[in-house]
Image (cartoon, rainbow, N blue to C red; front, side, top):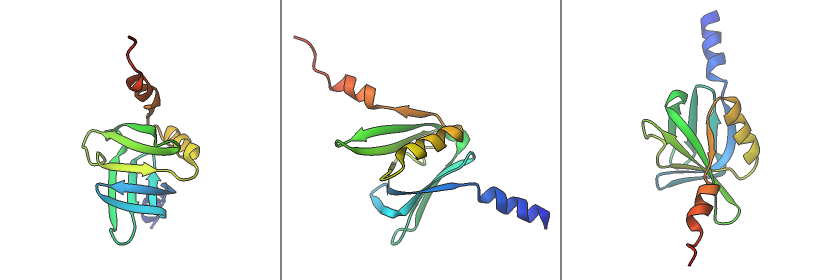
Length: 126
């Protein structure tokens, strides 16, 4: 009985955030799509009508890349070994900094690509 309670406690250590999420061409809107973070795994869940879940073990995630697109629109992309999160994008509508802080607390490397993008968009001097 104690073993079952430990297993249930281990399964419930995810912190879930309401986001807008894209998995391939499927979209889950806020507040129904979820981005679940734990020290063991990252998981993105899309609601009705897709009922799609993509996840990756923490050891396989090399980095979570934070990008700012289209003015104020922030997105999270994932660099992972298995490639199961390659076509996943998460758009935090609210609490972006809390999501990033929780990723850091769980041991994920969070990279910012805005500096790299700004460097690429500069014009060459004449």
